[in-house]
Image 1: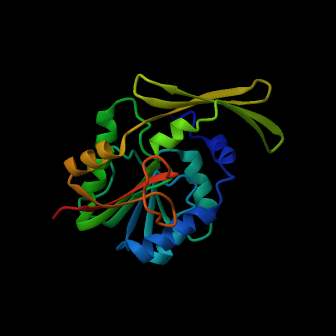
Image 2: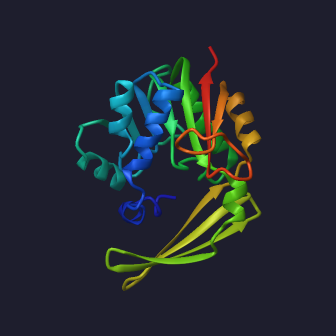
Length: 237
């Protein structure tokens, strides 16, 4: 887990431009407005903090990786950044008007109970009727269109990626090999959750899903077609 989310990770995923983040924030502002401050869970390099803060009156980022938080601090804005574990958020109950978990930052722990702890903690730190946005991969199309192997150049190094479905979770696994002397090899693994199961888990944690989107422009969700599964939930009072 920690090995994959170091400074190399930020370079490998630099192609994810800020446009996606800003589009999602615009859609939220129009269709599912949040009340700040907003907690960005697994904020990574902090690319969402500026648009979230601008749209919803303040944002705080939390991440487990010191390397990614260093990148986040290099961005303009001086947003509050905290190092911590999403399974045990270091914030008081009711500290935030909203929380977000975006770009498939959920599902990476070994046990399902740990994933549930993330949802329970998100609910705990929300105010009454606080809102939670969970942006997750859409499992059906993701598996159906899985690309087993690919390669690309990042900086001056070749990066080879191998992907496969592990039925034991089920998990979607990816092995990344970065050329070098020696080469760097690591694996990522995300647990696959069917939409209704995620909705049930959110509900069990006190978060009722109000809507589902299939993309960052708020497209209607279609289980067999949508690129994303974005669940929009509200904490029960």
